[in-house]
Amino acid sequence: MHRGKSAILILAGIAATQFLAGCSSDKPGNGSRTDTAGGLTWNAPSSWQDGPAQQMRVKTYIVKASEGDAENAECGVFYFAGGFGGGKEANLHRWTGQFEQPDGRNSADLAVIREIENNGLKITTIELDGIYKLSAGPMMEVKERIPGFRLYGAIVEGPQGSVFFKMVGPEKTVSAAESEFMNMLKSARAGAK
Image (cartoon, rainbow, N blue to C red; front, side, top):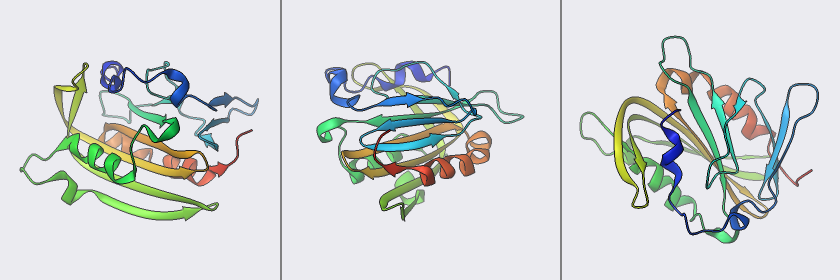
């Protein structure tokens, strides 16, 4: 998303070494790629492009817009060494708080949260539609409200702490990419290459 560059300046004082420790990317010749963070290794979808490096993120993937959508979706991957990113419940609360509903209902009441286990890893997923409150600046002020957006996120409890996967964008684009997102999560394993 072209608007997303300024939306991730939430913890500007944290040194890059605290959240990028142990992160890397490997691009095999077959078009797929393996990425790592927090002691996890996963395979990113080959159709997703690498986005520009962004503060606070291990990785940004660009998910091409579906036909009819005006912009791409983004999947940001976050890892904060030492637990600086907060726990599972705090992040789920933060993510639901980034959405409001056109009818005034509480987004937290509408979020679909699931707990799964795969490859010995505990994974919590969240799905939510609504008006995305794009925030920016040092105080994370809401800069824009974008209707028709969708969140599909996951918190994977890795050996060195949680790794956060957050895909946000137009509803149709995010919905179309959900199977790729789930395949990426299913590929996650403890141990970095």
